[in-house]
Length: 265
Image (cartoon, rainbow, N blue to C red; front, side):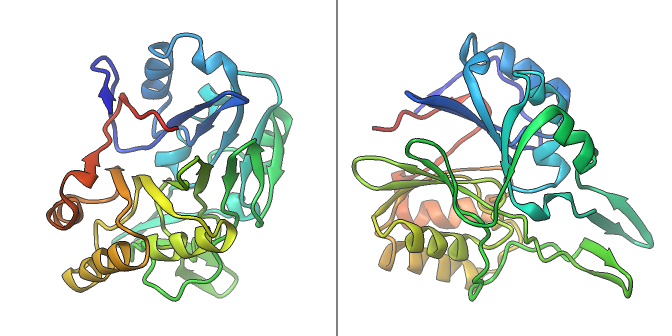
């Protein structure tokens, strides 16, 4: 793995996935300024972006959406149909919007919306997970995240949360945005779609609030069920989780900061 120093970081996530059949931008970070700066350091690669995928609606993954949409007219945009549900963070008695700032109609005028709750192949060998509906394991939750209905405020069910799957010769690589559906639930979903080894996990795993018991279970499942895949972690994984995973798996665990480059076979 290589690191490129000129890139800026923030509490957001955006990953550029380059393939021989097209480049895909996964999420757009938290702010237009940071995404624009980082794309400028990528040379011609952003101009070859053929699709955008959004892991979920939260602003730290969609804040740079205007910049991404400017890359190409009618850019294909892959996401879950629940993307447009208004979402909020509760702080005391106040509720702050943390979802998309564009309406569905506004976004449809600027992008080719390809919304699906089932897996979709974006470019050859790169898939969405679709909705992660089966959630027998703990989710990546925050008790501040809520949605509103006619009967009042309710915990966000994160139905829009999805990850990406990259096929490689050795197995599949899972690319996570935030894993609000839960890391173990996400991996189980990936195994349903592709019954092949999971060789690596990249991105945010939302273990930042996981207690010691759940972290131990994650370690055990990664080792016993998934064969200790390589872990390239960032965003909402959390320092305690990174330390616990590094203690368990050693050099199979690496941070994946802004500007990191990973080449896959």
